[in-house]
Length: 580
Image (cartoon, rainbow, N blue to C red; front, side, top):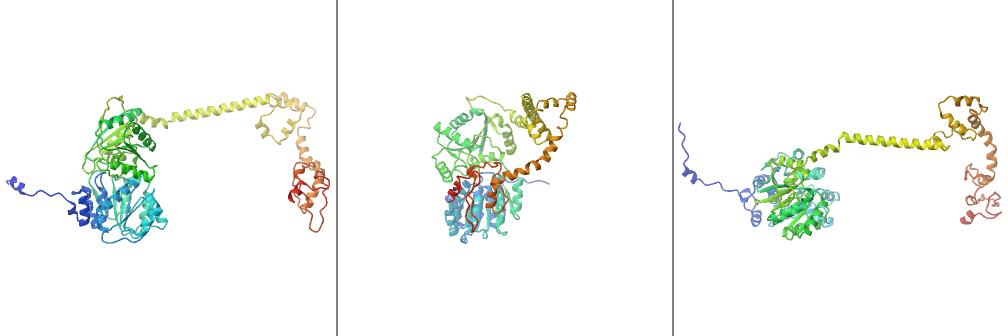
C-alpha cells in the first residue's frame, strides 16, 4: 500500500483558521460596540470558553491564572442576559460577591464601561461607604448588586435588600474569600437565594476546600480551566535576590533605579511595614503612595486613582491590592517581603504582565526565607532565577529558619525551665524556713504556726506566760522534756484548760449579758421587742455618735433618754437634730 504525500500547494490553498472574535461568541450588538470602544477585539481563552456557556444558562466553574480576563468573562454575558428587562425596588436580579472593596470597585467600573449602551443599573454595596446612600440606590431599584459579604448581610438584616429575585449569582476570587474567612458569610448568603438560579464560580486556585464549596453551590457545572492552578503567566519574568535584613531598603532602591520602572506595586506582609517603607521612599525623593486595610475607604480610592493617573509612580501596599486589581500597563512588581503563603506570590506578581503585556517581578529574600521560597518554587513548578545586586554584601541561605522552629518547642528548653522553677520553689521554701527559724529564735511563733493552732488547747497553754519558755524544748525529739513534764507539779493543767474553758463560758457569761444589756433596754423597747443588737463590742461605753434618738410609740409621749452616754441630760441627741 502506497501512502500518498500531501500536496503542499493544496495545503497552501486551504484558508487558515480565523481567530475567534467577540462577535463569534453570541454577544449582542450594544455590548460588542462597547467592547470595541475599549480596544478589545480578540477574547482571551477563559473568555472564549466561558461566555458561550454562560449565555446558555449553565453553571460555570472557572479556574485560570490572574490576568487572563476572568472579570470580562462573566461581566459581558451577564449584561447580555439582563438587558431584556428591568429590576424592581430592593430586588436585584444579579448578585456579584467580591472579597475586597477595591475589587468590587473595579468590577463596577467594568460593568459601567461594558453596559454603557444598555439601561442596566447597579449598586455598589461595600463597607466604608455611607449606608444611607446605598439604601437610597437600592430603594430606587437596581439590576445588579456588586457587594462584599459583610455589608451585604448588614443590608439584608436591616430590610433594605431582598434576594428572592436573584437569577444569577457570581462568586469571584473564591480562594481569596477562603483566606479572608468570608466562607461562612458566603454560605449564609447563598442560603438566602432561590434554589433555581445560575451560579458562576471563579477562582485562581482550586484547593480542596474550594472544590467542596463548588460542589455545594453549583449544579451540573461546566468546568473551564485554561491553565494549571497557581501557574505564573509566561509574560512575567521572575527574579529574586538574597540580601541581609538591614539591606532590604537599600536593595529595593537600587533595583528601582536600575530597572526601567514606569509604575510598580511594592508588597509588604504587614501594615506597619507599609507605612515605614512608604516614608523611606518618600525621604529618598520617590513618588510613592501607601495602601492598606487600615486606611479609610475614601483615602484608599483616592490613592488608587492617583496611581492609575500616573501621579504616583510607586504604590506600597499590603495583600489587599494583590487580588483582581487591573492597573493598565503595570511594568513591575516588587515583593519587599516573601509572602507567608505561596499562593499569595502568584496573585502578587499576577498584577503585571496582564493582557499579553510583558512584566517583571522581583522578590527580596532574607537568609531566613529559605523554606518560603522553596514552597513558592514547588507551587509554581519552576525554579526562580537568583540575581545579585552590586554593592551589597553577599549572603547565603541560613538553616536557622528550620532550627528556630525546633528550638521553640524543644523538650530540653522546657526541662530547663521546669528545673529552674523547681529550684525557685525550693529557694522560696528555704527562705520561708529561715523566716520561721528566725521567729523561733526571737521567742515568737511563725505566722503559719499561729494560724494553724489557733483555738486549740495547746495554743492556749502555750500562750500562758509560765509555759512560754518550755514551748521550744517540747519540739526536740529528746525524751528529757517528756520526763520533765511528767514530774512537773501542774500536771492536771495540761488537759484541764480545754475542758474548763469549754464549760466555763456558759457560767461566766450568764450574768454578763444582764450587765451589758442594761443600757440596751431602751433600744430593745424602741425596736418594738425585736431582740436585735445594734452595737456589738463596745459594752456600756457606747460612743455618742452611734446612739439613735428614741421614737415614741403611738399614743404615748416621748420620755427623755436617761441612758448612760446620751447627748446631754434630757437633751436631744445629734441624730435627732439631724432627723428634725
